[in-house]
Amino acid sequence: MASKKIITVFGATGAQGGSVVGALLKDRSFAVRAVTRDASKPAAVKLKESGAEVVSADLDNEKSLEAALSGAYGAFIVTNFWDHFSKDKEVKQGKSIADLCKRLGLHHVIYSGLENVNKLTGGKLEVLHFDGKGVVEEYFHQISVPVTSVRLAFYYENFLTAGKPQKSKDGNSYDLVIPMCDVPMDGISVSDLGPVVVSILKNPKEYIGKNIGLSAEKLTVAQYADIMSKVSGKIIKDSKIPPEVYEKLPFQGAEEMANMFRFYMMVPDRDVPQTHKLNPNIKCFQRWLEENKEAFIKAL
Ligand code: NAP
Figure (cartoon, rainbow, N blue to C red):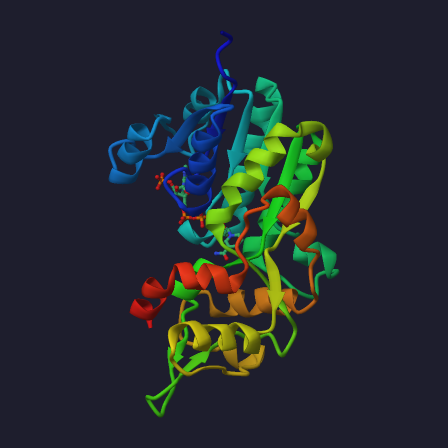
């Protein structure tokens, strides 16, 4: 029996890559090579136990990347802006791995990209964690790597961490602090990415060369808050915060996030039907929240 084609998965110990490894292992069509900077960490050990080959590599160390990609048919690539908050660094990491994919002749690369907002808006708006990925996405196409870029919407999982509703001043209710001014915002559970990537890898002819905006559904902040109230039994309301106020909130990256929401208000192309076609079992927000109700209430 011919051995399975290898898919190298970056970010395998994280949210996106972890979902991709899980779906590839479940599907069993490909062999999985999971990348981490530290193969001894518990998340990496778990990946090994579940059947993935685990290799150590660092996006900042080209030699290690070459070993991780050698002999692979394809790769899933995600870079983590929030590790360093630098567009330049994200571009450097992305371009060097793109060059390597080209040189090693990978047959299909799935890149976790986003729009180059700065270019799209003629310099009017900068969203650094989008712009860098946009530059890299374009570079992949320019140097003719067989690539599909997946542009993920806002993760539902953000509502369990930095994006969780905040206790309001009266102490009896919660405010959902997202500056979208009644414009619907796309969302997706990052745990639903894996099956999307498997579908793309199994249909290369259909998807190579495309950038696909992924979204399970579009809801206004008031609709997100209503569903949160219904599922949790707490009172959760849209704070109606404008971006000009949001960007001054006291947390690192507030201005960057405000600019991201300004871009979301320009309604970037996130293709809900295409996303459901790629993962027919994708969760809408209410279903995701019902499945994560306990964690959500605990986070409040
Ligand atoms: P995550 O859960 O924090 O995981 C980050 C992963 O990146 C880890 O597996 C880590 O592996 C790996 N990593 C970081 N630096 C590395 C390096 N130098 N070399 C090799 N691996 C490295 O992150 P995630 O959510 O999967 O992905 C983050 C990206 O998603 C960000 O760039 C963000 O802009 C993008 N994104 C987020 C959203 C959202 O709503 N949150 C939506 C769309 C896009 P080890 O630590 O094991 O080495």
